[in-house]
Image (cartoon, rainbow, N blue to C red; front, side):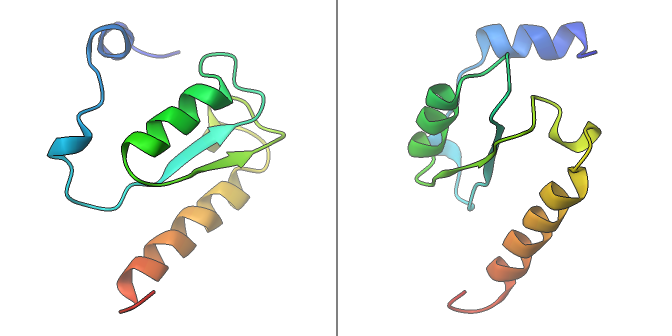
Amino acid sequence: DESYRAYLDLLFRRPRPDRIGVPMLVLAGGRDRLFSIAEEQATARAYGTKVVVFADMAHDLMAEPGWEGVADHIIGWIDRLAIPGG
């Protein structure tokens, strides 16, 4: 379960892409019932990137079967950031 403070953050805080100066990775679950793919795509667009959708997963990507694939994707993304021109 999400904490009450996290819930309030979702309600009252909005993304501030103008304050972010680092690459962003936006991940989504295709079966997420909290955020639609359209909402995740809008978030990604706001940060100048694209959303990566894990079609058979819901909201808690790291707590579901198949989390290893999500972790591998994150590690690969970080590795590509570390490579000049990558």
